[in-house]
Length: 419
View 1 (cartoon, helix red, strand yellow):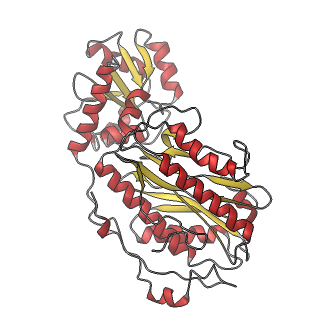
View 2 (view 1 turned 90 degrees about the vertical axis):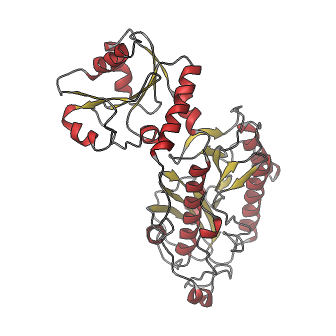
C-alpha cells in the first residue's frame, strides 16, 4: 500500500480577493506554499496476477450461482476483469468469461488487429464480419463450452440490443443477470485498490485547496473549475471540480443560471479524479467572505450528520442504517422530514465508477463488509438561498470506517481541517 508519508504535505493557503475568506488564506502563506508535484510517479499498476485473481473470484461466484459463463462488453466491468478498455459501440464485442478455461472474445472482424494489441495471445478471438450475426457466434461459444442450453450471465452495463439479440437468436441459452458476479467482485476492494483510492482522494482535496487560492470577486464557476483541473494535472492526473456559487448551491447537481462570485456567496465544489482507474469523489463547501450565522449553523448541522453516518458504519450494519444516522441529525435540527431539505440518499459505492453498487439509502438492507467503499455526503438545500454539502469517501474497516485521503473539513473556515 502507498505510504501516507509519500503524500505531498501542503502548508497554508491564500487568495487575492475583495474582503477575505474567513481569514484562513493569507498572502504570507501563499509565498511559503510549495509547488504541487506529480504524485503518481512510481505508483505501480495492476499486474497480470491481479487480473487473474479477479477472474478466479468471478469463477467461484459463477460456480456458486450455477452460472456457466459471463458476457462482459464495453465499460468498467470489462476493464476490471480483463484490462481491456474499449469504447461502447453499436457493434457487439466483448469477452465470455467461463468456468472451463480462458476468456473467449467475440469481436468485429475489422477491429481484430486492434483487439490483438490488448488481448493476450493465449486467449481465443472469434471475429464476425459485418453481415454476420454476432449473437449466434456467442451461442456457438456456449455450445463449444459444452453448455448449449446453459446459463449465460450478462454484465449489468451491457447494452439492451445485445440482450434482445441473444434472446431472439440464441433461444436455447438462459440469460441471467451478471450483477451477482460483477458486484460480488467489485464491491469489496483489496489493499492495492484502496491505495489507489486513498491517493486519488488526497489529490482531489489538494487540487481544491489550490483552486480556492484563486477565489476572487467576479470570477465564474468555469474559472474555478479550470484552476482545479490544472492543479490535478500538476499532480499527474486528469481531474475536475464542478463549482456552484450562491443560490445555485441549493441545486444538488447545480443550476444552469450563470453566476459570478460575490462577497457572502456559498461556494460548493464537487468532483474527483482517478488513479489507475480508481475514482475519488469529494465535495467541499465554504463561504467567500464572512459567513452569516445561518450559514454557519447549516454548515455545522451537515458536518454533524456526516460524522454521525461515519460512526454508524461497521461490518454487519445495514446500508440503510448509515443513511438513517445522518438523516436523523438533519431532521432533529428542523430540516425535515425525509427528503425535504436533505434531498438525496446519503451515499453511493465508489471504485472504478464514480457511482457504483452498493448504495447507502433507505430500505437497502445489504450488510456492510470490510473493504467496501462509499461516499458520505449529506446535504441541506434551501432553494432561493444556498446549499451545504460535505462529501468524503470512506472504507469499511474491521471495526468501523475511515475516510480516504484525510483532510476532513472541521469548520466552515477550515474545509480541509488544520493541515
